Amino acid sequence: MSKEQGLPETKGVQVELLSSLDLGLEIPGMEGRELRMRLVTIAPGGVFGPVHSHIDRPGMVYILQGTITDHRNGIATDYGPGVGWPEDRNTTHWLENRGTIPAVEVSVDIVRQG
Image 1 (cartoon, rainbow, N blue to C red):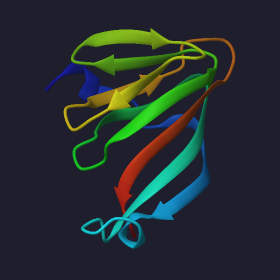
Image 2: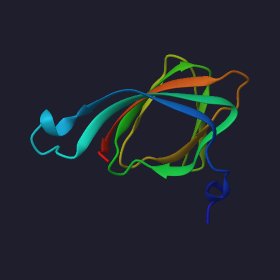
Image 3: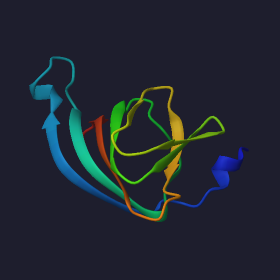
């Protein structure tokens, strides 16, 4: 068992759905999937985790404010405002805010409906 699996559950995270689009109505073969855009705020000391995968849920993240530390494969990477990253099928990670101000990101991903 890795150290990451023992992390606390999600805490200090607020998620607001900004918009969603039924992809089944837009693209043949995408029935049951939606494109969604969320505003995610992680309070100082907050954790978005503990560990989650993006298999079958690709997405992109863009940081608006603060710094988010992304933990993947035992490596912690800090991302600040104006920076983003992909979350593809190979992404297994968790996020935290080690800073002193709320970290705010826009997250766009494709998910199964319902």
